[in-house]
Length: 267
Image (cartoon, rainbow, N blue to C red; front, side, top):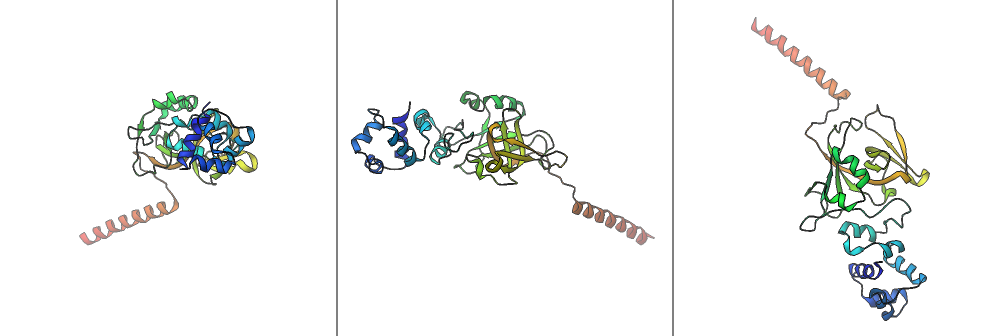
């Protein structure tokens, strides 16, 4: 149990003194000091007050080791979006950092996608994934890159590397957001979403390619959601819409007219 050390971590991050917290809880300072030193444990009423004060679930306070978490994991806990508060499958994300303590962007290529479905919550698995940095992305958010396959999200091509931002609170997603969704049954899918979580407990998903039918995923089946940020591909995206076809036809006509005019002038 990591209760005492977790209290110290949370208090110091909030820049509060033991007197500040004790006053808020309406307990003597030596009593609160005993909690942080592991000398005593609070009763259930005080435990609830501590949970409310730090906006952290009781189960998280007792069972998670905050000292071993990365910055983004701690921000997730402090925001109240940990696995024990929001009532969904939100959880503390396994992550890695570089030698300057900046969070890496882990790369899940096509070959690693099946393994990721089984190992996404295993820190030993996450540690062996290739990592890189994109300096133009915010350091205050957590990102991961997935290589997609298929043509369901054209014009984003098959084999593109799609980077997503880890979403802590799934209710914050908006209709039309493009997301990488991890489920244990379907694995990794890249789709646009219709957020039905609050009304139906489901996430509607659909492709940009109209040849693919939309469908829904139960919230209980979802393990992770990463909101689209950007993609990397050696292929140039191409959409043959009506304007493009008209422009192409006009260009062809102009080329033929120029050719005829040139021939007339040569006579």
